[in-house]
Image (tube, rainbow, N blue to C red; front, side, top):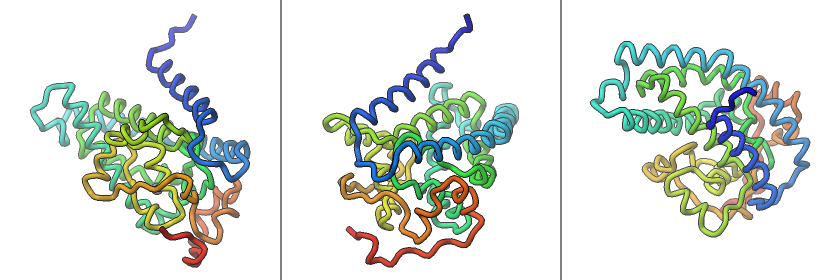
Length: 270
Ligand SMILES: [Zn+2]
């Protein structure tokens, strides 16, 4: 019988547990047909995952080995004990992603790609997969800089990837945590309520809650915003966001002109 690693089991438990939990305790009311959305999201995700596994991870793993060999980057030059090296390395990579996420909204051609993720009119675990394959290709120079500047070695790279992937699945999920657990967890991590605000059509709400792992970065930069979830209109306020939802249009959308934003009257401002 093949041996299953405890981490693979933990990953499967997280995915299965979240999948069940967001059905039992939904956070926001879904507005579109769930199965159609999920099939599209998973199909897009397969393209993105192909780029990550065929190009991104082999490239970053080689860079991480070079960091260790050449004592290159932040954690390699700091005199830290090993466990602290992993924590500082993962945190440094997470902080770099905070700025990259802002760039994907502010730089027009990056937004054309990131918009494909945001036009999902509802959120659940599959929204975490909804990324264009070309987005993964265009992000490569950022990931190279992220790994080299942080000085991530292969163990730090792997630890960051596991933390990031688990966090992205969790904070996109439509899970209503019991009691005040979302608020408590958001003291350290990005939670479904926090990230739901970032997926709002309202520009002031979308331009907040940029963190993808630790919530510290939004606290540090004053970009943390809390909005009641039943007031959030998920999606992008432009004229083509719903037409671009189909798989074919999602794939071609980044290569067409940026759609006109809807007039402010069509987006509720709070
Ligand atoms: Zn975003």
